[in-house]
Length: 247
Image (cartoon, rainbow, N blue to C red):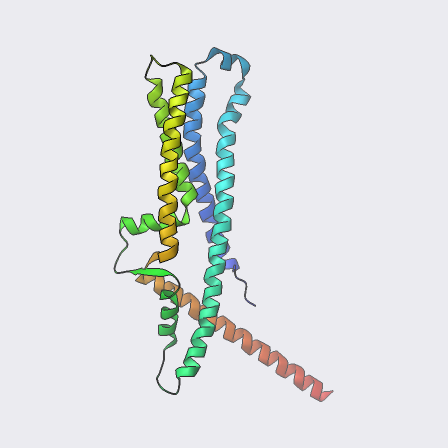
């Protein structure tokens, strides 16, 4: 059976995972630097820490975010690749069956059958180019965690920064205000992102005509590989049969 995660797509998955991990690590690094800057204003913090521990306080959250997001993205993309490959194999088999069934009544082109299979795989075809809305909706569906972190972390940092400008508030009240407003912001973001993801999962992601043709080309390539493999198996069995007959 053909691999559901072909080797030729491994570089694509690794590049996407590394890119997403770097972006998320950078997003975490900025507020970590800001928090360290504010903490350095506290004499007790400067006394209890050295430059190694301060560096770790900034670097470790970023490394954790990079590793977590990169691993999650890699697993997610590998599953997507496996699903696409499995769908291509099943579509090839379905198209062959349909061609056999309809051969006596009409000339059915495999290209049209593959296209029909793609359009029936929980997707929505967009006429022309994708708008920013379509791209954003697809991105949110594929990266809900990244959106929540990307909106939540800067929002909490901005809220805390706004509290620091109010000199009449004590540090405890500033932290309390940040926690309450930050929780409200993150909960609203979570509800909005997961709601949109649920809608996209039910109705399907947006694709363009170019993406449809790309998927069709992949299916045709999968069919050629399967037929070539079948021919090799038939040929090997024929050679084995001849060898047995000679003996």
